[in-house]
Amino acid sequence: MPAMVPVDMSVEDVHAAAGLAPGTDVPAAPEVNDLDNWSQEAYSLSVSTASDLGFPVGNITASFKREALMFGSSRWKDVVNGGHTYRFGVALRAIVVVSDILGSGALTLPVVAAKVELEGARASAQLLVRGYKCNALGDLLPAWQSFGVDAYGQYMKSVSDLQKEIMGDAQNVVPELLATTVVARPVPAAGEAVGSVYALHAIAEGATLAHALDKLGINDSAISGAAKVLYQSRIGDDERAVPDTQQRQDALDELQSFHISRNWFKG
Image (tube, rainbow, N blue to C red; front, side, top):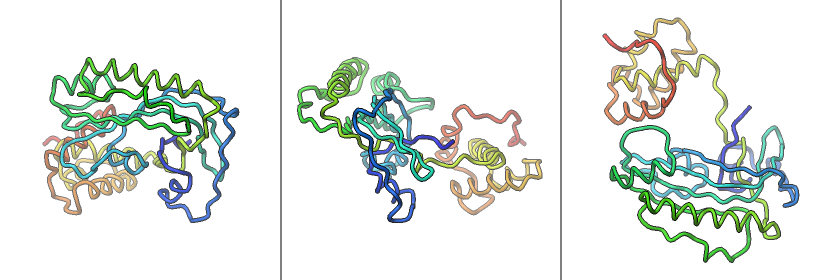
């Protein structure tokens, strides 16, 4: 089943971003009384992915490492149309963009606060409200400051106050698109998935494509083909090009908890 992906765009813009034909059927948003699901959400996205999905995360061409953390709460209902699922509702979302990050691992707001205070990372944040038309939220907006450990608690209290106000005021809710499967990546076949993970491991180890394919030891065109495609998208067409330091670190970060038990790349 395709994953539900958060968006900050209209249905028409989502269709355009996904490459669907103009005039593709647009589902009708449900009424506010039909929003029978409530949730809290947290997503860790690359800055480029967040930008593609419509979120205002700034300059995506910056040379330093940047990640986007999105969290919030929503009231929603899913509508199935044309083989895709569209999630309509009201949502409060905070987008935190972190720059100059050291190390790897999953981002959470406490981790961001600690990295800003202790490791010299930089963070900026925006609050986004979708599907709510009342203009009386100004007094509840947080006073933004350096996102250290102390400021984290103050920021979370302000977000909680906003959440209480928005979710308790149904008469001012006008459901908008919050997420959809239209822009979800298709689930890869087994060979493609293994080949992609294998290639990421090889890049993280600093292996060339030629060396990685030589060490594969499996006569499976799906695996070797997927590994080659990923290498070419990250390193280029030269099979003997050695991944640089940043390419190796990016591959390691993307792997996260995925591991291959054998070490193919030594020797």
